[in-house]
Length: 99
Image (cartoon, rainbow, N blue to C red; front, side, top):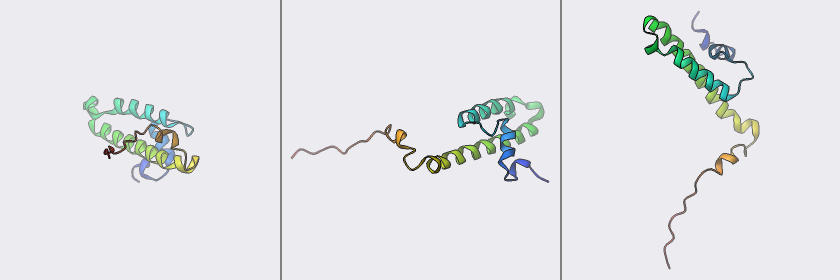
């Protein structure tokens, strides 16, 4: 039937990362890092094909969460949702020439 993570159902992505639907992006990132360390093919020489499949699913799930979260922030919180981060940007003015 195919890889269940490719069915378009994000519930599978929650299951892949082992997180609840209420998980924050920080929770998603922690779960991702833990699973990548656990299933990295170099750490699973005896079951390398299985580890490679697991890593593909984990990476895809994380990518979907990150892309979805980044795209939803402005829609969920309004156009000024990024305002606090914009304040952190350094504005460089061109040098003024003396008259």
